[in-house]
Image 1: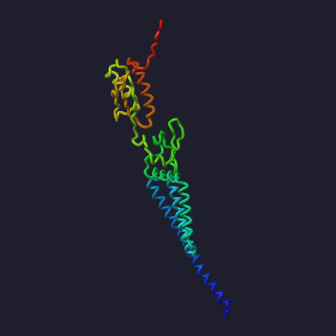
Image 2 (image 1 turned 30 degrees about the horizontal axis):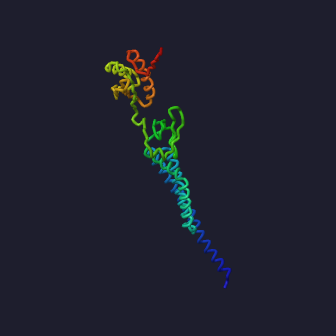
Length: 270
C-alpha cells in the first residue's frame, strides 16, 4: 500500500472541501455587505422622508448596521464549519449583562426614541416639564437640553421626560397672559374695567383674536381683584406680561383708582 498517495489524496480532498467553504464564505461576505449597504441606504431614505431626527437616524442606522454585520459574521462562521451555538449564547449573555448594568440608560434611550418618533416637543419649543421651564435646545438619545428663562442650561433625562407631564407652550403659537390686579372697594367697577381694557387694546402685541378679557375675579379681604387676560404670540409673552403690568399701574394712578397696600399706623402714647 502506498501511504504517500493516501495522504496526498486526503489533503487534496480537505483542501478542496475547505477551499470551497472559504470561497463560499468570501462570496457570502461580499454579497452580504452589498445587501447590508443597500438596506441601510433604503432605511436612511425612509427615515428622512418620515422626518426622523438626525441624531435618531444616525443611532438607528449604526445599531442596525452592527446587528446585520454580526448576523453576517455568524453566517460566515457557520459556513466555515465553526460551531456558532456557543458563540451566540455568549453574545446573548453579554447583552443581558450589559442591559442590566445599563438599565437606567436604556430607559433614557427608549424615552429618547419615543420623543423623536412621536415628537411631542421640537427644538425651539417653550415647554414645562419635570418642574423646569425652558426652550428646547437639543433632543439627544439619552437627554434633552433646555435653555432656561435666565439662560441656564437644563438637562433632563429622556426617561423621566417621556414618562412625565409635558406642557408645550409653543404648539398653538399663541398664549394667554394671566394677570390679577386688585383695586380699592371704593373704586367704580365699570370705570376700572374700562381702564384695564384700554391698556390691553392699546398694546401693539396684544391680539384682537382671541379678544382680551377683563372680569371681576374675587372680592378679597382688602381689594376687588380683576382677572386680566390678554392673548399674544408665544414669542411676545414676557413682553406683554411686563408691559401690561407696568402700564396698568400707570393707568390706574392716572385715573385716580387706588391699588390697596398694607399701611402702618403709628400709635403715639402720651
